[in-house]
Image (cartoon, rainbow, N blue to C red; front, top):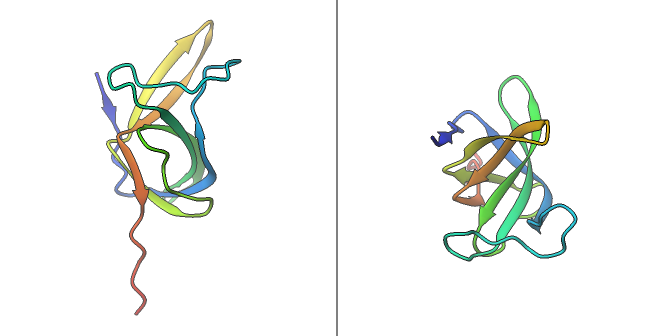
Length: 106
């Protein structure tokens, strides 16, 4: 089951430039099993009307063209629960990331 997130009321801002996704303790960039394309991790501040939280989102393909402080949007943002060796958490994956449309000045 895919757990897709409704991001319509969430603002995302890049906190760290995209980095190659690597397995813990390894120096080789991970690739998508189905496409063979490289995976990237983008750290963002996700803010709704009540609070903010820093999350790391994996995207596959060309290196994302986003920079620190830039507002962004995700398409098909998915939450993936995981449990490994007694540890658990939530991983995030998106089909793509793009700059958010800036509000027009009045």
